[in-house]
Image 1: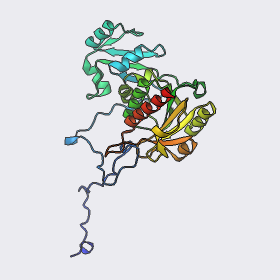
Image 2: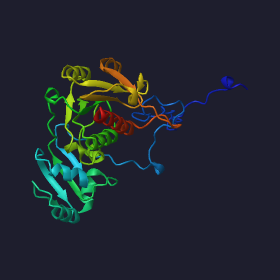
Image 3: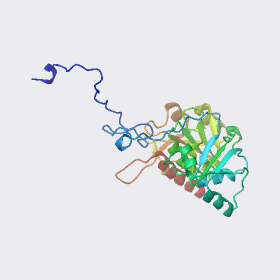
Image 4: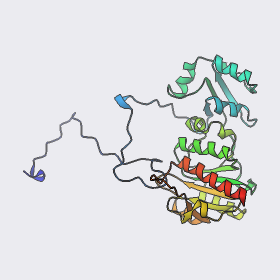
Length: 296
């Protein structure tokens, strides 16, 4: 009997419907281009164990910083205003041995007390701080020199944190993000940045296209990075000061962002895999751009 002639089994209350097919990939899963059909949908952990989810934080509340490099950089930043500092005995001893300034007296706790806040799988290394978020500099006050990164709605905090870490490594003057569709500089993002949140100024803007126009009016060359770029970044004429504009994985640069940039470039790779995670691609783009500008 053909399938379309078979009688359909009526749905019984309490029975389980078959799961829906998930969308391939997901946010920030396909580097620099849309995912190919047939990708595996994301799923939970084996055994059905629910991952730890901390309580949602008030966007106006303090930033949660944990991990050695993250908290150390915050403690060494005179612009930070702390609410509290939690430290294990070993972490407090290490802070003292390294001569790290303590603007606030730490509360001595067991490791489990910090894990209860950040989750059992977070690598907190015995340190957690609650502090006010850092102020966002005014875009117009950026000195027209060096390189800045502009992030076009990259929402994954791991990616943004890794991008900030690369920005600190390449002496980027600032990272520009949008007020909406961007993660906060706290928690996972700050941990992934490994202290870069307190080393690289983060400029928050309301409208990215207007921000790019402001940069251009102040003498910045704006170059978008996209897999569909007109030329390889290594062959694109560059000059300083330079703003590299990075789009989200999968979506890439938004159309208005693309048309506002002075140029749109791609990164040509020699291997059989021709795309990279957005944070890795950004690090490579920074290397290409800073090397070329230094030799200009």
